[in-house]
Image 1 (cartoon, helix red, strand yellow):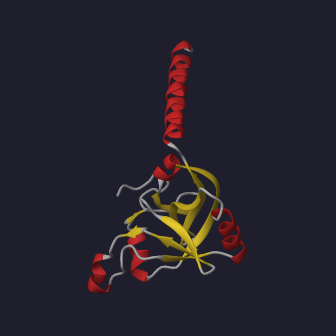
Image 2: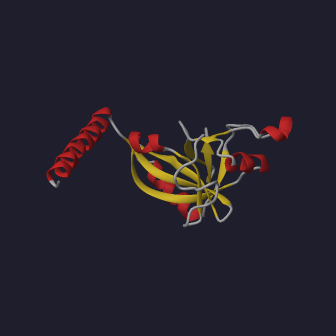
Length: 165
């Protein structure tokens, strides 16, 4: 997987964040109303795979079960040097959050149409973090509207750029 522009030669950017994976599709499929940061409880081989940027957030989500938050369906590739002792690639991973944050999310998710979607995984000061978004699903006509608006803005920018010469 290609490195993001947020890192240079595998080193963290100026703000101390080393982006592992970004879920750009989530911003296309959902209206993100608010975001929050949570830690991840990982095994050693999972951390090594994340440092090698071997992760995928497609079709992943967060779930609150028995007062605890879990990240479901996140694919973190196997760490080859571990051999048979490597981790299970799509297991549920516990999110490290304060009780009041979990309760706030649980209250919002119970409302119709809301879900918790992971937006990106990154390392902050050496610790794996996930940015979660409280999301409401977009309809197909919402997506078409956004695409049409972007296209019209692009046309306006081209016209203004040509006029200023």
